[in-house]
Image (cartoon, rainbow, N blue to C red; front, side):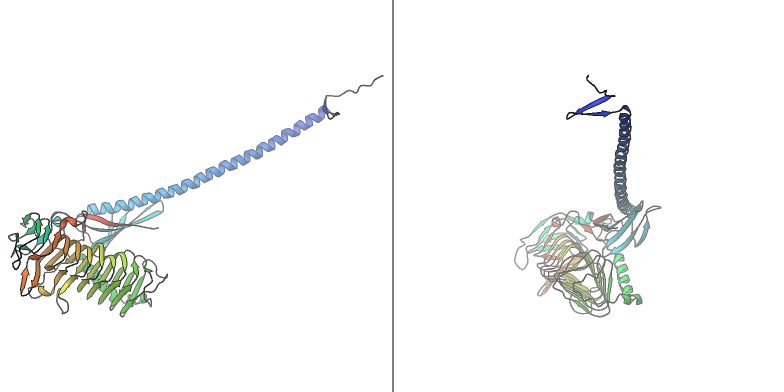
Length: 471
């Protein structure tokens, strides 16, 4: 008799063995499997939610940074717009001070040499931006001519190898060509002869912006509080100077350093005495060097948009290469290979002769000035010989010259010569309003040349340099 076992529900054959499961065991396993799957699903869901949350958080942070950048850009545009609104609105006159643009925006205006230093600041949702510009007067009209002569007693005589390119405005008979001591005229004149009239006169130059600064410089030196800025620094390499620092010296001072020394922006140096800078110095924008007596700048000094002021005498020479507002209440000499880059200004307010050089402004050697030379005062008949503006044989002024006295021209003016008289002396004769062996060529001046403030009552203000100040 054979016995056959009964398999309850299901059998599994594996390697010749039979595994037997009861119905109850299978249900228990299935139940357990269902619980494990739920746990797995919950874990995976949690991970996915965390990932999605992280992604959304990252997007939110990124959007926050993007919005900050957007607000910063809006603030920058608003600061720029404030400047343009101000310049369009104030065409008659501008003075130092704080100007309201609207209920939320204002800007600050200060003089910087012959230009206005304008700072505009704006804020959008906590993001602040600041813009700083130098502003001058757009040249046009008469200032596109080659010569404007203020003397009505004689015409202009061209002789020697003089080259004159551009229109000429005079009160007298105009212009003529002549030989000189038996040598015929071998130069050239290309332009029109025009005359001043009731509506078109020799320009007047307002010195208000300069006297405002001269008074400020004197008040700074006489203020008792300036002594707290006294320093022992002598021009050596240093990392201790910061933007906006003030250095005060109450005695004659000399900086001589052959290593490269880079100064911070907005540095103010005040010397109650004489100051000599002769080394390898680089000055950053809006530096002011204020000296009560004589300022000598030489060596390899470089810089952009710096201001040099001397109470008695200012001399720039050597291999200096700077864009500067060179101001003095005495004489000014630019010599050697000095290069005053655009938009430089040379301005003297000397009104009396106290001995020494016979030139109130002397551009000599191989010096080059890209900008404007200004001597606005009319000397008397007794002092005009000692208060001349002289441009020597190899010197060049590329831009314009304004002189209410006599201009002794031997070199080149690549731009406009505005002068009361021309002058040169060749023994035994003085020649007034003669131009001999010189060049005046208005076409060689940059087209978008900008004048300093003071030439016109109704200025067409234009921006000549632009800085975005970091937050």
